[in-house]
Image (cartoon, rainbow, N blue to C red; front, side):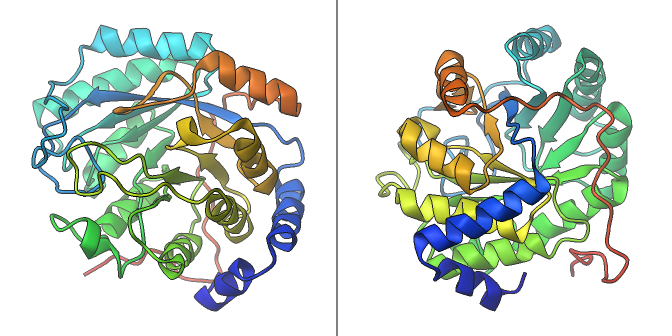
Amino acid sequence: MQFAELKALHELPFFDLLKQAREVHEQNWPQADVQLCTLLSIKTGGCSEDCSYCAQSARYSSGVEAERLLEKETIMASARAARDTGSTRFCMGAAWRGVRGGTQRFEQVIDIIEDVSKLGMEVCVTLGELGPDEAKQLKEAGVTAYNHNLDTSPEHYPNIVTTHTYDDRLRTIRNVQDAGMSVCCGGILGLGETNDDRLKMIEVISEFNPQPESVPINSLMPMPGTPLEGTDPVDVFDLVRMIAIARIAIPKAKVRLSAGRTRMSDETQALCFFAGANSIFYGEKLLTASNPAVEKDRALLEKLGLATLAPNRELEAPDASDDRPLSPACCS
């Protein structure tokens, strides 16, 4: 969708926007199941990047200590626990700028992915920048989806991160698409952006060809010691509007209600599900931030009469449309 279309949606009265989003959701997701995902930080802290929101950057005194890659059995134990409590997708994140084939740490990650993929869950990883060869190896090892968020608009991005560019992000996404993996790509609300920045981010993501398989919508959790410490919380109605717009703009993607749920009431989350969210991160922790407890999430879903999505290890990446060029195009 183009920016002008997204702007028109954003200017609709709140209930008119929700009605439209709900219609799109029911057309594309008639079963109304919710995907439960668990996210584990397999390598925490010590990152060389300067993302203003991230407590894992080595540039900030956030209290997050740099750690080595977790032992394989520790990761496997977490993956089995996630499966046993109902998660259908296991996501592993590492605080690295990127990975390079032939290195010890990349080979360790490949070995871990191969074993996690045997547990019957979908496997998602977020490891920073990827080259084409590394993307192919991850696909062959059993990765279902690769997460690489754009965070915000191209225009606002340099205010948030200076150690890499927006084109760097898009290049990795192109490599993921070319390798046949699904793309998981969304953004963060509350980075000092305008509503137009939010809509421009959705515009870029909606123009991907093939489109993303999932779109996380995060609300900033201001972390102590980072430049965005003390930032005001995201307005609930702004969040619900962005969930609704993401649902309309990328109708076949799972829209994931991600970081910030600890600050949301059950009523807020219910509005997000009504507006089109059909995936959540589920478990005790979300990288370095807390996450609602498993029992609380289960109770909310039961109150709302929402079933959970079964894992699909055979999940194919979305197909590209033949009537327009692949996107993102390979960047300069």
